[in-house]
Length: 111
Image (cartoon, rainbow, N blue to C red):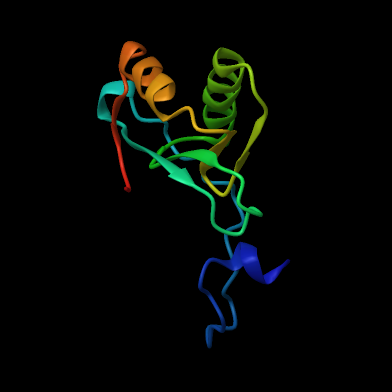
């Protein structure tokens, strides 16, 4: 078992201890309960601008689906990494309008 899957358990003095390796799927909140932040970022990206959508709470499948919808609506590339949706280019206004139209609670963040 890798260290990353142990979720903070380092050592147990109980000789009968067995780590529960069941996969705990996180429930996806309803769009109205999500608190999404849309921001522009260009740090460590060779000066290129990307639009980040953060704050999504739910399963990775639902996050990937939302990322695909945003990428196709903007007509650009992007990815989903570490719980963030990364869209190439500055599409903050378009993404914010689309998220609000779909019922998500979203707002612009950053400068």
